[in-house]
Image 1 (spheres, rainbow, N blue to C red):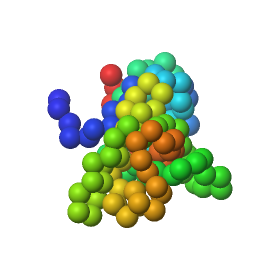
Image 2 (image 1 turned 180 degrees about the vertical axis):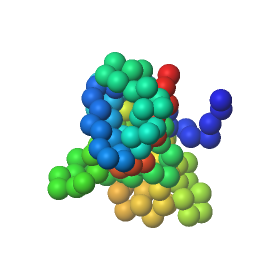
Image 3 (image 1 turned 30 degrees about the horizontal axis):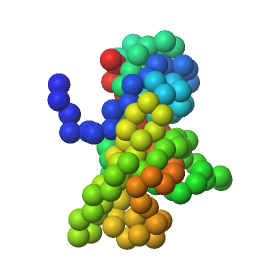
Length: 139
């Protein structure tokens, strides 16, 4: 199956915390970072997820926010440090490509945000991703 989702990160499930309807799934990415996904309990069961299961974490580029440093006091669980690799700007929006340990991510943000954050190729950034925006597929 081909997907339009550019951000596809390989990893392994390390823990699952089931709830009544939802489950949080901790994934260790190939580069060593930890990522949390919040999916329905039914989806976790349908995928047969358990510790050790190989998965691919899928995140739409419009769901990746950027910061110029780690952010404390924030409910967003996923903060992946990386480096800006490329910026493609349009009239209103920009696609920022980031290299994180073991993977590449794309964040689509406003052109104003690129300017306000002073983003240029080679600077460090932190990709912020809500756990509810991380979908999982078995590898």
